[in-house]
Image (cartoon, rainbow, N blue to C red; front, side, top):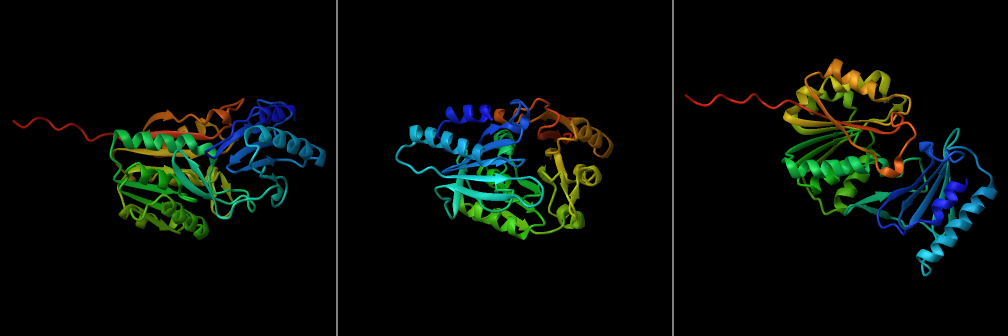
Length: 314
């Protein structure tokens, strides 16, 4: 675990939520199970296999030493979560966790929950996807945005802050959308967003009537029993895209499944939405570098064709 300890020894004091060490990328042999995140003012260490108490003690010593340098007048707060077989085990190792706990990213604020569940409320690997959305809003007006599998609506918050007039958020989880509404309130957003707790696959009529959209965001789970299985269900989403987009509209197509590479998404798009043109793959945050980019989070941009140019009037 020396690479993790070395990373801790050089940590900077974070202001925004971000990943600090990504052993899962395979770049640090022997540390593939370790991840360290900052959700200021709390550090979150995650292991994807059981670890010895002596290892946790070593991490604590390293964090305490570094924190003494970075913020000698502030308490050290850190949480450990073990994700192995069965439910995740979460332990408060030192200090405390704010309640409510609000973190920031590029000026936006989000509610997070660190002491229960595996998903904390903000997916840090999608930071560049949210920055891409901000950049898109600078180049073209976003009148309507469709955010499918919205979770806690981080994309919606960013879209509204970037000037989108209306965002439709859809997710099966009432609890996640409730946090999404809180996230909008935290950012002073009082309108322009709707929150629909529906099964997407039985709601196409409602989705279609709300369009067409300048941007459609697809960020489904890779495997969620009874809800979404990428190998079976992604095609059902993609075949709807051409009819949901305005001419020149964009689709952000995301997949976080190590076993499915870029070819999987490209082939599905070619089969089910050939009308859309591939634009680019959005780079992941550098800290999420992977020995095999095919395994890492895939965030692809596709674009609908513009309307044909009209001939000049005679």
